[in-house]
Length: 394
Image (cartoon, rainbow, N blue to C red; front, top):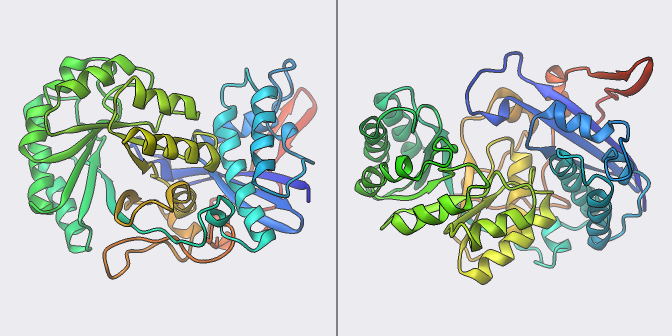
């Protein structure tokens, strides 16, 4: 089989608001291989990633991502790894290449699984196990402590035993203001639930500012503080990891290749490593990070804050983990993200989530439901056409 087509589509909500919600828009990728259609999603600026896919070449190591993929042989997972190396070689100086390739790589796994009538996890040597994870409801902090507590109460009422609150104004005010937000989340969830906090890199490289929040985090029995610093601040991660007593440090969503994520574990000393298949280069590199985490005695957790297409792809790299491992579960999705997958991954009666059964990613998309969100894009250089939105086919 060969990669017959790769079609990227820019979809977006009518209004993009200034909040940390990555589900407001997306770059959806459709690939066709041997008559099978696969879907993937890039977790990055959609139009920037789209440009990286189709940009005219600059030089031998700065070429469009699609050029390295179209027409390539695809009969097994080793072909996906080979195409990934080809993308790296030909797009070395194209800095958005990893993000752009991620959605394509996910779609190739989905298409290959459908063509061979096997789930992706089986293609990866995990058998047919659907996995079983404890989902933590992932939401933004409220505008104030009262709203945060209300959110936490709704999460508990929905049956979640774990939750993560993040971004909003956390870290931008005083430690006492952050303490109020953390306490509100704990009170709303109850004392038995697992609570995490995501700082959204707000502290930059200021270890002192991050450390000033540790007493409040410990007081409310927070399991981890996520992404306190920018992705490359390895020394800062390592310093904070030594300062925390009961609070672990997490990070990794900013990694856009496996080496960066592994460095965050080995040099940054994070306890929980969280990568996003839509950023790190797809399912294959995420699996590499998961296996390395296991060998180092660290915890691998998916990063997902967009659609359930992204959630399914992010769960596959550790579908063979022991039952009950933690998994991020985005709870406040936009209408676009909700409409994309008509049958989302939902909590089972035992409070766990599992991958759907079926070939590829096991996820069915409702293309007609998201068609109203499609944004037509045309890219030209002078009078030469480079890209025009193709028909959005099921």
